[in-house]
Length: 85
Image (tube, rainbow, N blue to C red):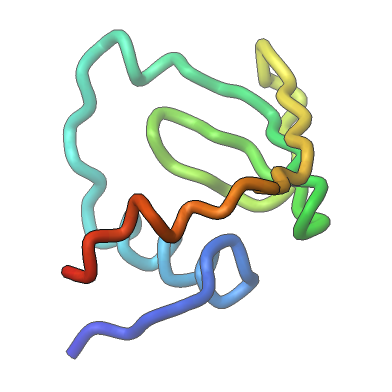
C-alpha cells in the first residue's frame, strides 16, 4: 500500500530515501550530473536537486543555486475551468 506525504516535508524526504535505497532507476547521462541547491522560500525548505531527485539541505558539490519566489495569482482563473476533473 502506498503512502502519501506532503511534498518536501521530512516524511517525504524519508520516503524518497527509502525508495532509492531499494534501487534507483538508471538515469540518462545528461541527468546524472545535475546537482543544484534550491531555496524554496514560500515553504522555508532548502533542498538539493540531484539527478532528478530532491534531498534535504544544501550540498557543497552543487554547481548552481536557485531561489524560488512565492507566486501570487491575481487573476480570476475560474472561466478557464470547464467543470471536469
